[in-house]
Image (cartoon, rainbow, N blue to C red; front, side, top):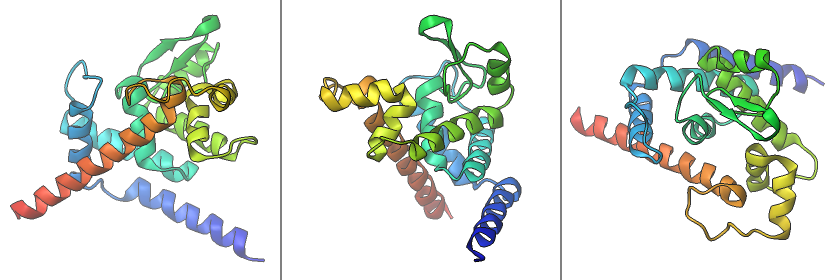
Length: 202
């Protein structure tokens, strides 16, 4: 009877913590190293200040939409190379906008909203990811991540003929789900190394 109320309260606590708790310096350092050392190369290196900002706003978005912060940051690397104002031209005069470049849109207003802040960009990505985890006819985590990268068309095409399965880890199409997971794993390892180095230096 009280389960929905308890879940709502726990969700509110998580969001409040994400808003108020400081970002762990080693989490930000791990993100900075990951961003600068992972393909593709950044136009200019991510600074410590930028790493704190990206981790904070991705964490807030992940709390609001109950998604994994490391996956959102992997989207930020893969989709825009952590560029808040990224705009990618898509087929049919659509645009993918913001740090996570979620659902392509014709709307300039929507594009402006998604590029208006890092929180808006990561929130759009978190909402998009949640939608795929909740979507019908999605059979696995990999398929949900393929949905993020290319929608039902990609999911169903890859079921029939996963022609890109044997290509390099950072190629797109059927391999996009694995790519996101590889990048997420690399980020987590980078954060773990930053924590170990901090302990060793103390």
